[in-house]
Length: 306
Image (cartoon, rainbow, N blue to C red; front, side, top):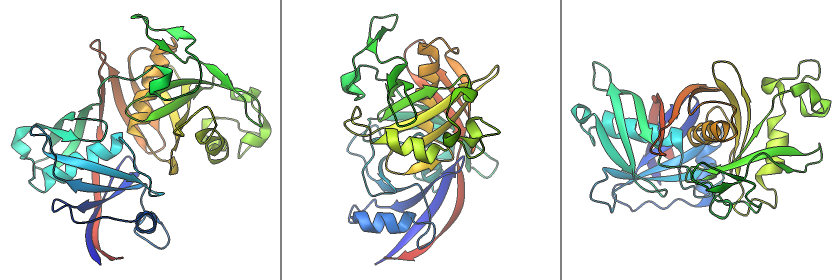
């Protein structure tokens, strides 16, 4: 079959969009993997099917599939690109300035800015409240800390690896995240770095250590893995995404990392989070909602045969 598609990205985290308002397209796991293959296909971190929503308040439903063909509940960069797809194609009026997107993680209110041609440039997504209870993240570790409202969560819990133990704080933003903050890279084994003479977040062999923890037994549904460093003005972060590998950016990961930094006393509740593909602004409001602001960009469109 022939499929029309649009390629969009949020800070380099890229997606193949397919109009499925008719809901008659069902892709196999192999077809999704082919579409996402960067050598034999279009190349992407995932496929997003644009479908009608069953919720009256929502403009459309975002059906997000990871590059390996597995279904995901939520994708922060993907939902901003979803907003751009809908606004730029007139499914949502540019003059509206906001709408509600439907996802497997529930409705997500989105406000947006447009340029002089009524094309979306930036979007702010209400990502909802973070889920912290270990059984709901999920993570098979006991809660070892309490929030101000006495919600138990996993804070800086050591999980062993072939390279020693790393401490993770666990947060769900509709999908599970395990965040490891590294204060001193010099203490880590040389073999975990591309360059042992320049140990830093940029030279960390994330594909190696991220793959190990993604499938660790303490994560019953696997997990997204973030390694982060809190600086004076921002949080730097790299992410190994569940079912995908390292990506240039991850919206839910930036949100989860911001929450984890606040929970562990490393940063305030509002920060710029610097990823390999660019910067997202994250604010954990007093009402417990996490707001994510960032760009969305269309790369190209075309037709592919499967």
